Image 1: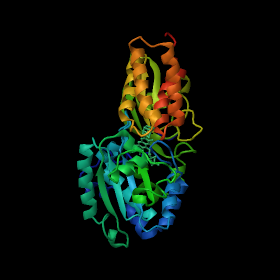
Image 2: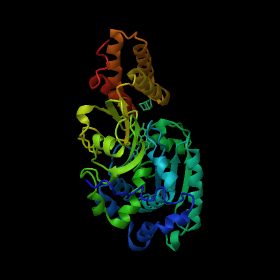
Image 3: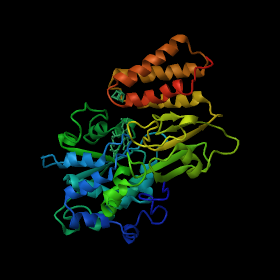
Length: 411
Ligand SMILES: Cc1cc2nc3c(=O)[nH]c(=O)nc-3n(C[C@H](O)[C@H](O)[C@H](O)COP(=O)(O)O)c2cc1C
Ligand code: SF4
């Protein structure tokens, strides 16, 4: 596997993110020029479909298919939204794109919005990302000055108004329908799906919502071609991915590597291994809601495929060594989910509180047989009856802790 291909991080550390000239000098906005002067929107979507790019926000939905669904809608008014909410604990890749190369994100966003026929787009930014807000405001003003944004882009017939929307820092507002509610000024809680946003999204109009990392791949695909992209990484979900390594690892940080890489390769070859004296216990892949990968999973390939043993999710890899107190970890997850439940449905509103209480009793050594039984029931109802995927997200790490780590072995 070629591990050194760089699509998103190519210019990180080499250009000043506050100066559009430096991005232009490196060939920036050539993809937008190609899109505007040499392609029709359908052709750009065909290229993205051929790339097999799938969403980097976690669910891995095919990007070309989503753009096509919105492009084919007959409504005149359509929207494009870049999801930069990024509230998953341990995940900070999207903010690194902004910090290192905001113009790459803007270029991908402008092309994506124009392919679907949107003349208005938003960046939904995490409410805690003050520095990124400053960078994006500057980047937007510079892109507008260069005529890459606004009316008659590069003197063509294309127009795009791009607005920055600052969220309030709620985890659930990363879910696309809650995010749409939030932009509309409503309570940030999920909507019933269907209808999906591609049909009835922002202000009831067809809307494409894509993750920032997904969007940052678009300029490369337009310039180099979808077929070439499809040859990188895992066949089922090609391309590179930003991996966020943290925990018991010598070299933590955000790194770009192909999809299909294994947890062992990430820890050893990219993360520089586990610090001396520490022993690997498990790794949580994809944030607080992620799967717990144990020793036998170390050589499983990470992809977005539904059949994948260890799904990639947001790409975060938290390495836990044997010295970690499992109660602390379980409590931090349950406390996070209790705080972040939007409260719309009962299984999650009540379930996350009860879960948090049981974990507290577990920590205090006061867990009863009744608690253990209740825990199983709470996790089942979160997984199977919650209104939105948040319920499944909560249940997953606890189910894994029970099944794979056997946390009740001694109680
Ligand atoms: C509780 C919850 C939180 C989410 N948070 C994010 C997020 O912070 N960023 C993101 O891109 N997608 C997040 N998603 C996924 C979005 O709903 C949506 O699938 C994604 O933005 C689509 O973009 P993509 O196809 O490019 O991945 C979240 C989903 C759920 C259920
Ligand atoms: S599962 Fe229910 S309460 Fe929890 S975040 Fe989703 S809609 Fe809100």
